[in-house]
Length: 212
Image (cartoon, rainbow, N blue to C red; front, top):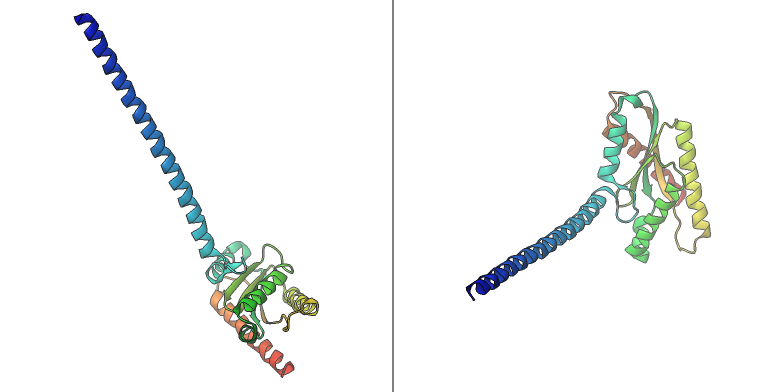
């Protein structure tokens, strides 16, 4: 009887032990699954945050910070010293009028259309960013002034053609200031952007004179 009791006691102890081990394994698996799901969610969140910090949400192109950073990196690379480059500062014409007359939703459509047309006329390696509001910057790498002027003409022509085909009560149009220079160690990014911006205002004045 005692021996049978000891056998039963040992059986129940072993059973309890294995049950505890089984529960511990289950708990471990649950913890691992939760950790994996959390890491996956965190990864998606980090990618989303990185995308928001890098790209303009409306157009999908670089935002101001990312665009300037890309330009600084390119101009700071000694391998690119001596290379022709064009900075085009771009400003949408009469966007405020579109917003006032048709609402900001239509203004956003104008911005998106301009971005779409511009992207269709440039190479993938060029830098295109939205500086904010109705202002954009286009950096044409390894481009002479003649090449840059042709691209700007092509963009303006494409905008005009899109306007002719559109049923919108306004035209797609932008003023563009193109500044060409050769990259060297002394070149300052902000100075070059300001020069292109100044030339854009000259183009804007000419546009206003033609559309009085």
